[in-house]
Length: 203
Image 1 (tube, helix red, strand yellow):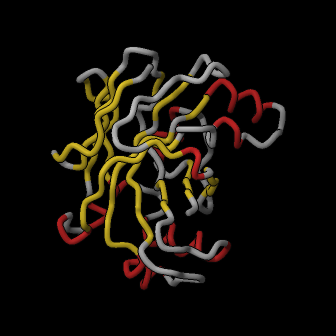
Image 2 (cartoon, rainbow, N blue to C red; image 1 turned 90 degrees about the vertical axis):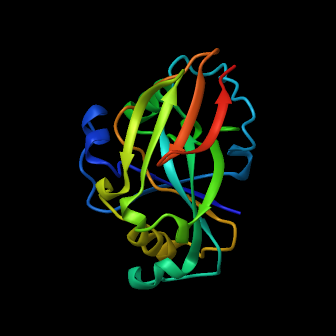
């Protein structure tokens, strides 16, 4: 299985990181060793002093696809979930400043947290989904899929131009504003509407 992730897909998040508005989706990948499931604790790696959470809607691909047109993209998934794209922000900044690839700041072990999934049919209009992240019981991110620069169907179509999508592949669709640091002792809980999708500790 492949894990695709989208950067810079919410305008307000781009502002908080002083990132430019992208003209096309920003795609990067994580290996399967990045997966962290079943509410297992996340251990802060020793190579970062500025580890950030990024809550994101995630889409699970359910059929083989290549060069998918946006109008047909809805046929390629049936579930949406919520996850966390962990980022070693200090490492990412340094690598960007040096003009080097920043994959290791995003794709390290356990950096892709995946919670539970909800059938699309139970969610209504996909681009009207609301989600939030709570850190230690306080809301730190409030997301609305309508605010995506590139909607889910466009993301699926774009990715499939370059990569064959297979059953079980995952797409992280980008994070809204409010990203921030985690330290040992923190607790993260994620919700789609009012349904809890994950609840895990930082150690």
